[in-house]
Image 1 (cartoon, rainbow over the protein chains, first blue to last red):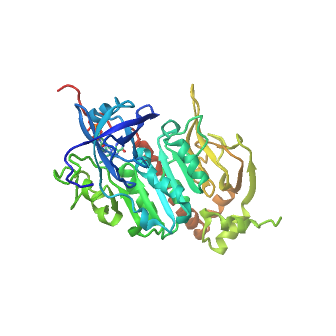
Image 2 (cartoon, helix red, strand yellow):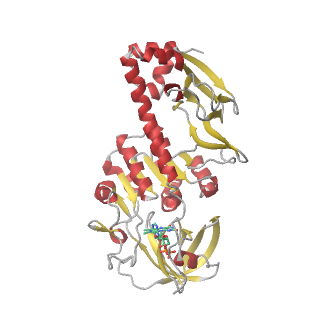
Image 3 (cartoon, helix red, strand yellow):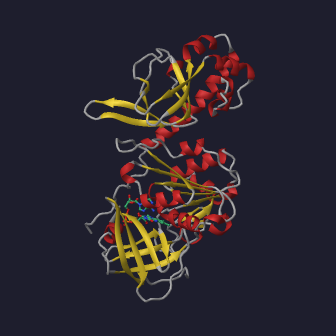
Length: 271
Length: 162
Ligand SMILES: Cc1cc2nc3c(=O)[nH]c(=O)nc-3n(C[C@H](O)[C@H](O)[C@H](O)COP(=O)(O)OP(=O)(O)OC[C@H]3O[C@@H](n4cnc5c(N)ncnc54)[C@H](O)[C@@H]3O)c2cc1C
């Protein structure tokens, strides 16, 4: 998809499913019937009528249907919350550089997700689960706030059945949670990690910095470490400079970056 | 079934990785295998902290009892972790309840016995303190991260008023 794609293309809402109180998944198919090609880790600019656009990652790719898992935090996302099956929504994209799925092939994979950060990683985990023999040991470390904010529970079960080691840890315990309670770096610290594995991290930036630090301390090759940076953006097409990160534009050069490329910028407070 | 000697069990636990022979012998002399069923307490808040535990398998929750709310889980301790540093901190009292969530196999180490030896064995003191400081630092970082509540939704700064 051309980066200069200026106009939204109409997509039809084929399904809407609630994930959490403030988070839901909307599945979109091109209304014009033309093909859409998206890669895991890419995002679309979704247009909420009268409110504006927001970048939202593709959270599942199924033929021509793209799922987006959205949390209502402000004007645009609350606008998108109004969409119902049969509606049409404007979409620009898919944009950006996604996860390095091809280079992961043949090796071990470590996926670290924090909160809603599991959404852009779901298409990678789907691919791994579908083509399991292409990959070595696959470990998922998923940290979230509490039991009630656990996303994609059915998928977690499916991935486990596909021999993906799923480690879920919550920040806050509750009577209905019998799993680990702590920060996501704790199971990561305790795990045996292959130094030549490919690691993919997505979540709040602070969590990504600390998770990356843990993996590097454990000897992971920084060249195999990739992060999805989701700083606020405006145009999505590399024109406006709103999402500048050091020498990069997140919308054009990311959102997935190699750790070496962005490690210096991550420590800077505000860009 | 072949039973492993205490020094082998201790040497195989991540907390005591690469322990010198001399220190391993002292530590092993203070160790004992224990098992706990789900729901059983390994330690109770306020009671004398005369032991610490190396978890060989299972999960233990650290809990604090809050009136009207019951037992709140503040953290869990997992296979390969160490449980308890109160035996090193004067007053030597457990700060939290520690309860088995799953069947637990652990090595209980006699803190009183080790405390006595720490004063006149610098090699032992160095090994134990440096290992516990690392664990403390990791847990403190984890606790600070969780305090940030970073996975919750950002504050809504948008306004519907034009
Ligand atoms: C590449 C990329 C992929 C994204 N993928 C998803 C996704 O899959 N699902 C999803 O729900 N959101 C995703 N986001 C975030 C989403 O774009 C923003 O939440 C959205 O733009 C907010 O718009 P709004 O008008 O609803 O809220 P606003 O009124 O713009 O903001 C409301 C609050 O959210 C904060 N906020 C806005 N954008 C961000 C951001 N990018 N990161 C952290 N805080 C932010 C603001 O500071 C403010 O406090 C992604 C962002 C990027 C850059």
